[in-house]
View: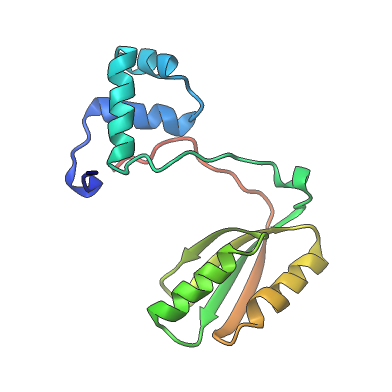
Length: 159
């Protein structure tokens, strides 16, 4: 049974493995083992343990959205009428089903959500906001900001 990662201490080797995979999740086990100074079998066992403990929760693929026709990205701030788990869960589920939605963030502060979207053009963005968000009964405020550039760090955060 997987352990709760909040109760598991990570040693420097675990951190080195995570940092290397965070920078390049495509590393082969052999290259990873060499980079962190372990035998391939020990390295593979550690990676499997990090996965079993839900510390490594998968890998992601970074795509150039313009190659798919997503020429505009935006962040959409949304405020809900009612503050309830059921309303929030329903809204998140509905947004994640939309093909334009890249990510949704449940926020503290004036707005309840930030939604990261990619769309083909400004008319697509307008239609998505009107039809996909403001048409929902629980939504009382929407504010859209264009994303000029989107970069993702390849460095593992340290605390």
